[in-house]
View 1: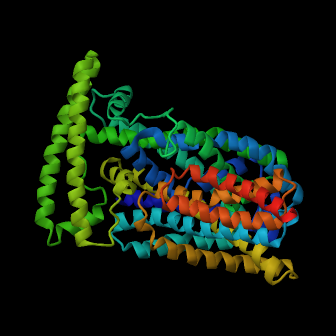
View 2 (view 1 turned 180 degrees about the vertical axis):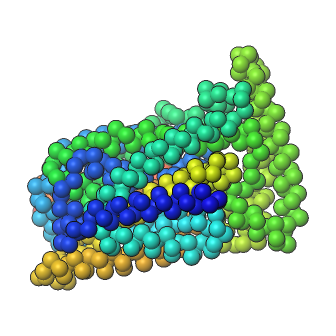
Length: 560
């Protein structure tokens, strides 16, 4: 990066962080620190909810997902608007009226301490692990740009966020989210525009979409019902609905965001705003990835997008083998460019026969390129067994660094960093609030003044920050970050949601039956995932339904 890029990056991040800390300087009570005094308007709530979900994983891995797999991932979010409506009608008024700090306090009122503690524990485990992934994603950037060891960059990224989270609490997080979402929207839209401008003069936006469609990247809707397919209309509407309902309704990192609303109405409007804007936002991010894919159809693409690993390979005993693979890759990419040019000409002539021939030739060339890439991956693994060989997380970053103008590079890196800071900070805060309210205050020290609990909240934030940084050190073994974080959530969210569904709607079931139903269901969900019995989105449905059914049956057995 140039001096201009570094300047833009540093000024943007400092501006966002300082603004958030200054606006939250009066967070001197537990209520202010964890819930911002329940004083925020609907647009604060809505943007904070969106920013909490939009981590660096979104802006690093999602374009890579669009690049490699097309637009079908957007179906993952189709159940979100409906989930926002259900939450606004049910969860929000209950949580607000009870004046609770965490979602899990309600469970003790409805059931008992065991159910509350178990559900809070499942959340803490899941959120702690997934936050480690959120730390790892921006650490990739520092590692790639500066050539630093990924373990040090994990420590730096997690530590920076920890400082202002401990200092300012929820209000600092919410105010920084406003700035982050404004920067994100502008920068990603500009990145998409410039990607199209970098295409050959004869190729416009519509032409790019046609090429992407012929290459199988405009696979927006899949109507086929297939439980083993990760992304289709039905898994998105049903599995995605259950996942989003659990995530926004029972995950404290999100519940804590809309509990900051100054009224039930403001919290509802914030959630509905998220429901309306999230799908278009995710569509835009995936589309940027698809446009990057089209760009590389007309331009040479890297053999492997993780430049740090290929640089190591050039200095290794396998350098000669890698050089031969690069030559083969260059020849194939030149061949691909000719095929795509023929395809574009056929599209303009509306010659369907020539189009079909080009599609077949393009598919064969892509398969040959994949084989070359597989050979390179084997060389990387031989040279560095600990290497991150899933370079989908590096596609967008490599494109930005290689082709976009200086200044915008710094801004886009700032986008990824600031998005990560927002989601990590919200996660730290939710982990601390759940630990203090649902564990420490309930089981360890129930009689303490506000100053004591505020101090414990800050120490809990530090403790969880350290845990998440440790988890980040192992995240490079999990493949695509955006898939990994959602798979991890799906292992727990369905069961947690099932507990809340029983609490809200199955009044005849008590705490003992619900407690054991949750444990049995979690074991069955993990077994189902381990045996790969179904696509991961359906685990949310399975987990929720299992808890409801098993709890109902156990309650009948206990009565008899």
